[in-house]
Image (cartoon, rainbow, N blue to C red; front, side, top):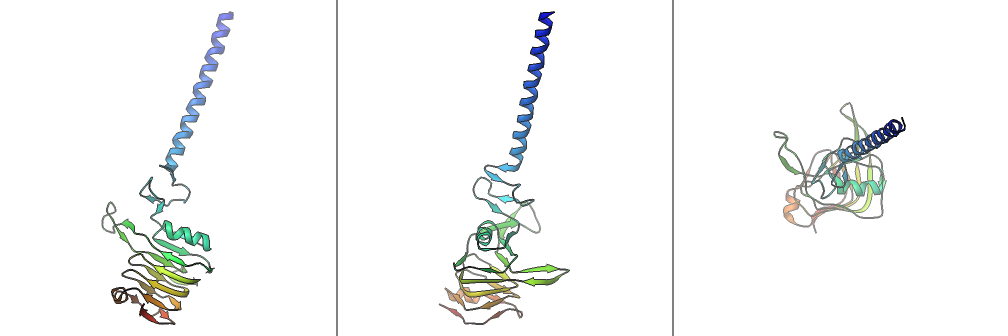
Length: 199
């Protein structure tokens, strides 16, 4: 009888240990699903990352509502959606090369230009425009577009394909080379209050 009780207790303890280990393994697996070589993919909702284990680069848009989130968004993503007026006494630098899935073949990655969107849309109309006030914006990424809203400050362009779309620059646009000025695009809705010259 004593042996039977001891055996029953031993079996109960063994099952309890196995259940505990199983729960721990399941939790570990769940954690592995949200982390890829040190990069937590769940932190940004459904956004995905490129170059896993290398740098935390988001292939979808990043939101910016203040100086700190703008700085992070410019490092993280090729599309930055500004959601507030932002004023900073620091220079803004747009740099880095990004890729995105090809429109015709989602398995193929192609170069992505940078987009800084200073507006919100609703029913295909701009519902709100925002202003970024900074001493200087330096554009080093190829095919950078500033869309909607206003930049208060000078823009220094050091790459090909800079573009203004429905955007206002209250300041000057300087190009470090003539070829960068030649590749500059500006639609009819965009304005630059200062000069546009090679400097």
